Length: 231
Image 1 (spheres, helix red, strand yellow):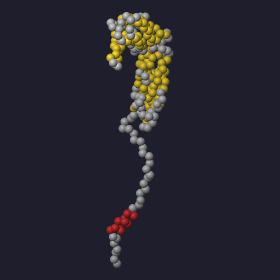
Image 2 (cartoon, rainbow, N blue to C red):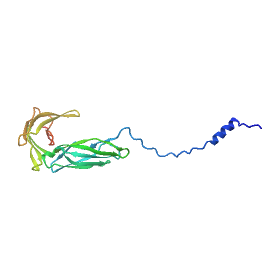
Image 3 (cartoon, rainbow, N blue to C red):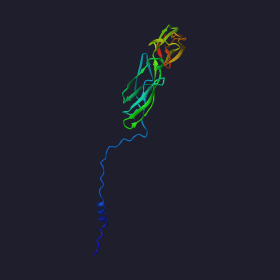
Image 4 (cartoon, rainbow, N blue to C red):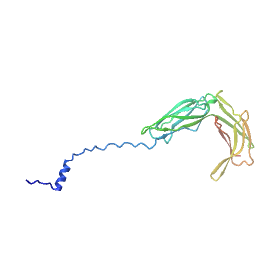
C-alpha cells in the first residue's frame, strides 16, 4: 500500500488553519502620562498692604505657575512667629485675607507657609511659600513757599487708634526734569522729621521743573508722596 504525501503548499495551508485565532481587545482611552517631576504652585498677593484701622485686608490667588484645577493651603504666620490663620485657595478665584492690626506688634512681614496642595490631574504637588508686608498708614501735608518746603508727617497708631506725629521719618525733596519725552526724578534735598513730625527743606538754586516730597516707607509704616508743582 502506497502512502500519499501532501504537497508543500497544501501542508502550509493546513498548518495555518490549525492555529486558533487570538481575540484582540478594542482600543480604549489613553491614560494621561504623569509629568517626570511633580508640578509646583505658589501664592500671589500684593507685596504691601497698608492699614489705618483694626484690620488689614488683602487678596490672595494661586500664581500663574499653578496647573489648572489646583488647590492649596498656607499658614499665615505673623512677625512674632505665631500663626494668624490659614489661607486656602482653589482654582482661579481670589480670596480675601483679613489680618488683625490692633497693636504695633502686628505690623511687619507676614509669611505664607505651605501646608498642602493637590493637582487634579496628577495628585500631590509642590507648594511654594509667599509673603506680604503689613504696614501702618501714614499722611503727609506740605506747604511750599517757593524758597522752602515745610512738611508735616503722621502715622497710624494702633494703640490710640488715631494718626500721631511720625518722628524721625526720612523726607526727601525731589525734582522732576524732562529731556524730550523722558522724565526722571532726582533728590534735591533730604532730612528727617522732628518729634512733632515736622521738617523744612530749602529749595535748590534754579526752580525749573516740578517738585515733590516723599516720606520713605519703613519696615512698619507705609510711605507717602505729595507733588508740589513748579515755580
